[in-house]
Length: 134
View 1 (cartoon, helix red, strand yellow):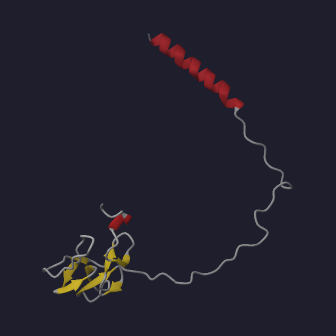
View 2 (cartoon, one colour; view 1 turned 90 degrees about the horizontal axis):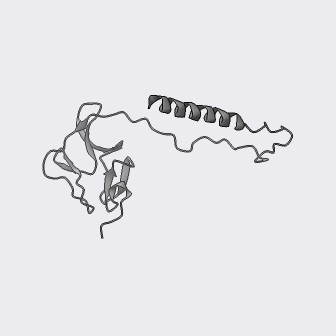
View 3 (cartoon, helix red, strand yellow; view 1 turned 45 degrees about the vertical axis):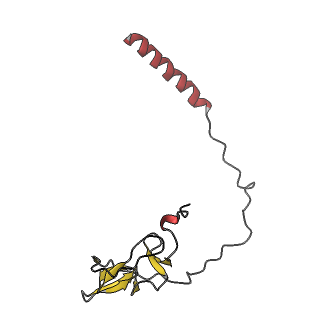
């Protein structure tokens, strides 16, 4: 049985080696035949809004029962006994404050802090771009 397997494997290897030389690369294109995609040079412009560097701030757990309940079923946080439409974090002075990815004080009324977009979004918007339930 081993001799049959070895013969079959040998046959397959020889067949594969015969196929490989048949595959060839395309010849290189002549430089004279190559045409530019565009006659115009690309415009290089700086970004209009420079990105701000955000330090990772240590998170603080929600405490109390003042956390807002959003229309889509999610819940905000309660920071310093006040409604926080974001997350509790420690600032540079080690004081607890409400923030939504660098937006001090969190989001405005009618908005919630979205972990995917890392910004404030309308309160009704479902997370993960899901369709509303039927």
